[in-house]
Every structure is written in structure tokens, then in C-alpha cells.
Image (tube, rainbow, N blue to C red):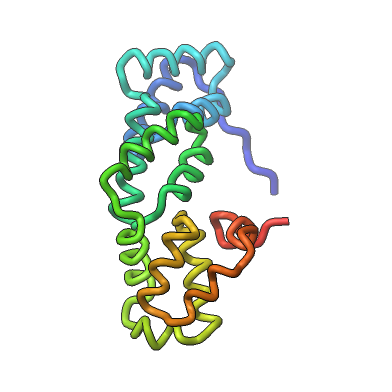
Length: 187
């Protein structure tokens, strides 16, 4: 059964809709523009509401990106590369995303963050014993890569726990590029 089309909104109703969306969670300007464009009675209406949101300082990609980057670093213990990838997926410009991530990670030791991420994800396991299995070691390496940590930081962290981690240095660089952020192999 096809879904009913959403009612097109006039400027006043679109403004209320935008405020309701922003009350639920933060949005980048690109994300919100897309959402409003789907509901606006015209492109001009969406542009008016976007301009009004910026005028009231309710929409600022720099603030959004900085807050997002700090949150993903602190709460999810993700690496720089993953945070940049997620910001780009949320339609934040490359320059703003890179700048926000640079500031958010400026005082962070990537190896320590990667170790904390791995320890959290594999909690309850004796890491030295668990990572002695070649498959578990490879999975832990792939997990760190998907979480956005550099190859060198990932290997350095795994060397702390597994004697065979040095073998990972011989893997082709393309291995880490063969997976996207969701852990699915790319074509």
C-alpha cells in the first residue's frame, strides 16, 4: 500500500516543523534543508525558513560539527577518520568537518583512545588470550579500522595485547580501505 504524501507546509507551519525537528536533535544545515525541502510548499518557503533559522542562530554547521565530534570522541570513543566520515554523511562541508575534528582531537592520544575503544568493545575478555587467535586478532584490527583509527595506531594498540600483532604490519594498505563505516565490504 503506497504511503500518503505529506502535507505541504506554508512558511509558518514549516517554521514550527523546523523548530520541532531541532528540538528533537541537532541537524546540520544540509540535513535540515533536505527535510524542509520535502515538506515545504515551495523552494522559496524552505529558503526563507533556513534563513530565519540562521538569523536566530539556531543553525550553525561549525557548532554542530564541533559538538558532534566531541560527542563521538567522548561517548563512543571513535577515531578521527570515522568522525569525519560521519560528519560528511550528515552533509557538513569537508572543510568544516576537518576543522571540527582537528580541534576535538587536538589533545587526544590516538593510541590511548583506540585502546579504550577496544577494551570497551571486548570487555569481559582476557585480551592477551583472546587476541592470540588469528581470527580474533584480524577482527580486532578491522574493528579499530572501522572505528576510524589509523593503521599505525591500530597495530600499536594490538601489539600491547598480542604477540602476533606485528604480522598485521605486512597486510596490504588496501585492506583497511576495503570496508566502509558499517563494516560491509565495498565493491
